[in-house]
Length: 112
Image 1: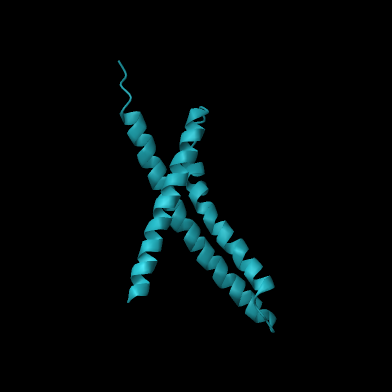
Image 2: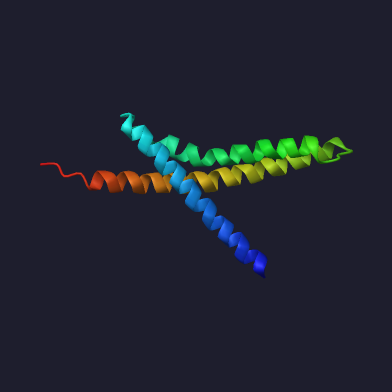
């Protein structure tokens, strides 16, 4: 049962890392007076799903021994589904963190 605790710890580290990276990139974007942060906040953290899919293709071509082409099609399709799910998960975390950050910093600004 130690494996599930370790996986939960890795999930927490992933969520914190995605949130921090997205907040920093959103801050840089807002400092350059580009206020269209909505999709970039989502895509910054969600791009890790693209990395996961690219790495799965590298793993397929270098480490796996595949005899049939249907095995390649099944592997790529399942990894595409997994990478898309990972993209949605990390993108949502990134957007939520960026949304919280923007609401917090602009909520502290006093207009008189």
